[in-house]
Amino acid sequence: MAKENIALNEEPEIWRQVQSGSAEERAEARERLVEANMQLVFWLARRFVGRGCDWEDLCQIGTIGLLKAIDHFQPAYKNRFSTYAVPMILGELRRAIRDDGLLHVSRSYKERMAKIMQAAQRFLEEQGREPTISELSVLLDLPQEQIVLALEANQRPLSLQTPLDNQDGGEATLQELVPAAEGEENWVQSLALQQAFARLPDRLCYIMEARYFKEQTQQQIAQSLGVSQVQVSRLEKQALRLLRDYL
Figure 1: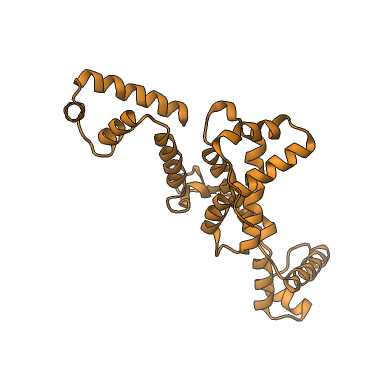
Figure 2: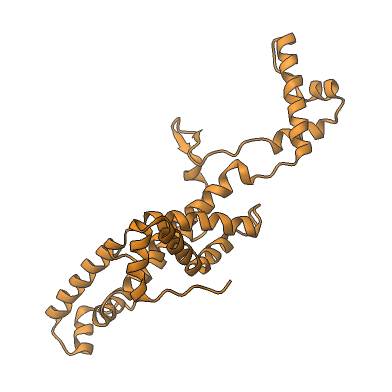
């Protein structure tokens, strides 16, 4: 499918159709927006390749996030749609990878686990305690290794908010102990910042880049622009206010 290109002068009408058009207009507008932003979905989905989910599934999940972004986006705020959509698409992909539905357990393991649970329940009712692995092995006539593998394959993943005891007697969570995917949050913030900078007038963008990326003083910038240091200070404050609004 060829990429749908939407001209800037078309965007207001397309968003109007999404928000208040007829059912047919809304469906057509949403489809155009999805086609126009699928490269963004592909770009983000690549970050999750190799985490147990097929490429086609990743693209479908990312598209769900894109559709949610389309349905919730408010053009009146003057933000770029891509800036708004990126966190929603990433969030949908992360949730899907984390959920059980994408942790594929083979049918044979599931069936074996059902038998293990039934045998363990019978043992508990008869003996008043839970069976050991070796006792389950005898009851089911299965090697202990197969029982252990079946139990591990069917364990639910721990939530990042799962509390863990620590040596100080307090509680920590997995989220505090396991680092986030390398650079992911910084990357999202960097993308938003780049897009906010792109909206600044050229002069303000030059001043912000010189001040915060080239570490020049206001006096140095004033000399390069042929203005006073006071003017540079005023323009810098104006740029910061605009960036806060854009972000």
